Image (tube, rainbow, N blue to C red; front, side, top):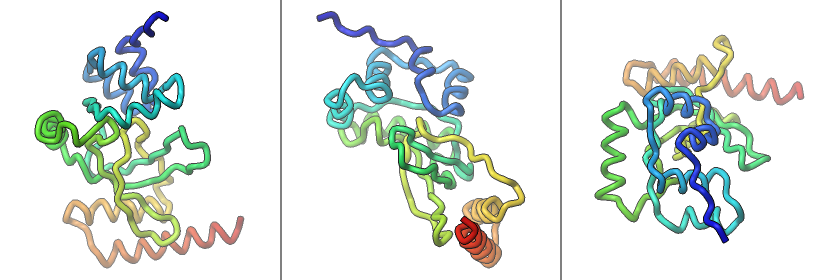
Length: 193
C-alpha cells in the first residue's frame, strides 16, 4: 500500500476553516514543515475515526500563528459538530505577538508532552446568551473568526463595554447595565419566536 502524500503548505492553508487564519498565514508567509502538515491534514481531513483519534493521543504540538489578540470580539463555530451554534466571545490571550511566541516557545520546551495541537495559545471568554455572563474556553484558532455584529445592537454595545473593562479603562456599572439590556433583548427576541 502506497503511503499517502503529505499536502503542500498551500493545500494545508486552504483546508483551514478560518478565513482570518488563512489570510494571516499567507500574509506572514508561514511555512509548516512536513510533520506539521501531516498533523494538520489528519486533524482537518481524517481518513477514518482511528486517524482522527490518533491526533489526540500523540501529544504533537503545531505552531499555528493567528491574528487574534486580547480584546478582539470573535466568533467560534466548529463546523465538525453540526448541531453546535456559533459562540461569540472576547479574546483574552494571547495579548500580543510577544505573548503568542512566548507560549509557543514554552509549548515546545517546558510543556513538551503536556500540550498537543489542540492546546493552542488562545483563551476566549464566551458570552452566555441566557444570562449575559462569560465562561472561559480554549478554542482552536482553526475555528475562530472576527465577529460580525450589528454595531447598534445591545450585544455589540455590551461586548464593547466588556472589552474596555477587560483593558482596565471601562466602567463596571456601565458594563453591568449593558449586560442587563443585552439579556432583556435576548428574552424579548425569544418571546417573538
